[in-house]
Length: 185
Image (cartoon, rainbow, N blue to C red; front, side):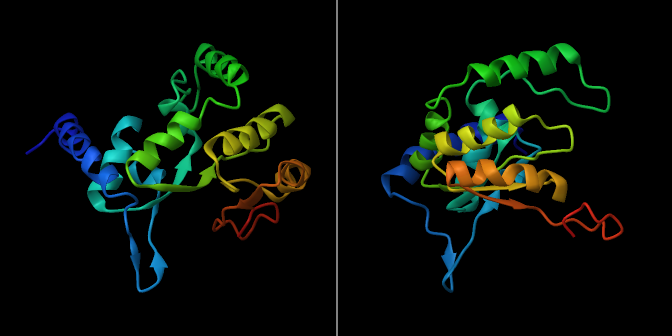
């Protein structure tokens, strides 16, 4: 029985081997297989890449909170009553990012043989224009051309000009709330 820490050490040891052989080939019958990093949400951010290598996944959709953690962001507020100090610290960190902030994150994935294709940045009804713009700047820094998002129709209308300006595609995740006309369902 291994702990998550043991698992991380073992899989990290395999990273030089993975990068020595280049990209991980996870195409089967012509279909590229990858995963959203949310699938590894029970792991620490630094354990996700080794876990993807171990499972042989060569393509990733990176959750924004995982990219931020790998780039050195303070912990995001969690729970139903988030800590205002944690929220303020994260907002301050986000506003201090530069176009180069997330390039080392992409490099970590590339060195492991994983191609980052999408950023998943969820935008809710309280999102500011600054945060929408931040999501596109993060996507550019990660080198992706697509953003996916759990969001609503009203937000999509606000996001459209940012997507057009930044030349990055944006798509809403489908959900099963068919009773709510503002949901992608």
